[in-house]
Image 1 (cartoon, helix red, strand yellow):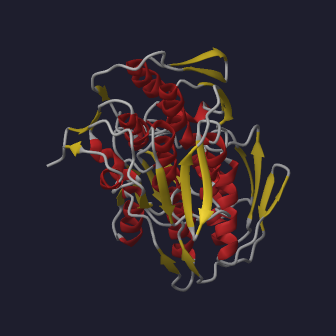
Image 2 (spheres, rainbow, N blue to C red):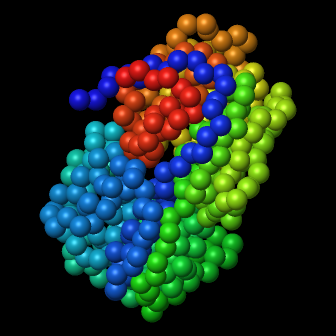
Image 3 (tube, rainbow, N blue to C red):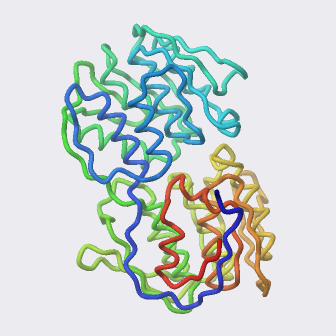
Length: 410
């Protein structure tokens, strides 16, 4: 039995508390693919409890043809490349929304390399059937850099399984660059080196992953919701556990982004300490390399009365939902607006006055919508529809809110 909604009572003063964040699913899912390609057993510690990662683990161990990734985008893309280059016969499928998320750029690239992949329904979208065996035709690929870094990461991680190696040319603007860098750094942790010069990434042939051990860091995307809480609360002092100041994750940028929104930080005894500081009236943010932070920042600033100028939101339309439309719809409920006066340039117009009564937030089957809007409870009562969507990346989110003093009713 799942709850239809969770009601959160207003809590302006957060309890001083330590929050154990979930492990990064971005790191976990990459580490799982690399470990699957290791000739010997690799040791992975602190893997994410997120549904996406649990799905990846389960499918890698499953000996059957139908691979249902549910709503896990990284799992769909990474496993498509993994099964293709390892010559396995699989049918990749997922939820109705997953079947609307494009995979054509990755499939075209894998076909160029030598994979046999056929679409089962609509061209360019799951479900698709991968047929072995795989025989490499070329080691040179050209792929757009501005659509999804997950396509690029999927190809790079599986490159050591290609007899001829891989030379990947990125065309146009490259988005989410830190995620590609994370992939390359994790590959190097397991013994495979790549060269990235200008727009070309080369993985030389003859390299093999070595069975290493790796401890997955806590998730900076999950941390972002706590920075939002601190920004909106009247009183707050929160310690976040399991993060590293030298993180591989691009979403560590949330520290810089939220500083002018009124959130200070310091590193003390291995903990990230968050506290309130003076806020600016306006912020400028380019989300090209950290699109998963956009919803959190937009909601916090709109509610706090901070205007914003944003770029780099293009990829948000092909996520779990059309995140731009979803944020626009829900911000309107508190009097905020997100507009696009010129193509690619967005303006956040904050609320002039917040409603007094409870605001009911639709989540659109999107975990980030639930967690980006929940911090509004620092200012007014909030009802979040379909609260179980957080299981996708942060299963203990609601319990963690309680530990900070919020009263929740499911």
